[in-house]
Image (cartoon, rainbow, N blue to C red; front, side):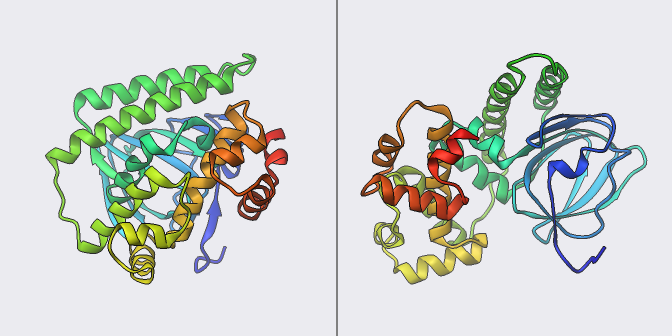
Length: 292
C-alpha cells in the first residue's frame, strides 16, 4: 500500500470484520477494536465516525491536528476529513458508530437546526464528557445496537435513523454546554467563516450567490472566498451548494413534494434548472435519486 497516497475509507471496507453489526454500507456499530487495524497512513473517511474512549488511550491526527483520547472522551470525525491513527494502548476500549453521508442526509431533517454543531465539531473533534454525558452515550449506543441486531425487523433502518437523530441532538446539547465551560479564542478569519456559515444556514434556500453573503458581511466576494477556503478547505460556493443539495436530498427522500414543488421550495427558476443543478452535484437526476 502506498503510504504517500490518501486512501478513501468507508463502511464497506470493514464489512469483513467480525463483531460489527451493519445496515448495508450505511451504518456500523461495534465495541471491540481488536480486529480493526491501526491506520498508520493518512486516510480520507467517507463517513461520520463517533467514538467514546472507555478505557486506555489512543492518539490520532485529524486534518493534521494531533489529539489524544483518554477515558471519558468523545471523538467525532466528519466525512472527507483526513485521519491518521497513532498508538493505542493494549487496554484500549471504546464505543463506536459509523454513519455514511447518505444515511446521515436522511437522518437530519434540516441543516438549519443542527448545522452549527458540525462547525463546533470541526473546531473541537475531541471533548471530555461528564459522567452523566458518558452514561447517556452508553445508553444510546446500547439501544442502537440492540435495534440494528434485529435484522428480521422490517423497520430496522427507520428506527435506527430516529434514534440516531436523537443522539445528534444530545451531542449538540453536550457541545453547547461545553462551549461556555471551555471558551476558545477565534481568529478574525475563523470568526468571519463562522458568521458566513450561520448566514448561509439561514438563507441558502433563497440565495446561492457568494456576492449576496459578502455584501451582508461588508466584505468583497474575493476576500470572503479566500478566507473561507483558507479556514475550511472548501470554497464559499461549495459550502452553499452542500446545503442546497443536502436540503434537496432530504426533501426528495422524506417528503411527498413533487420535484417541481421542491424546485420552487429551493427557489430555482424552473424544474429544469433544478434538475441540472442536482445532477451536476450528485451524478443523479432528482427522480433517479428519489427512486434509490
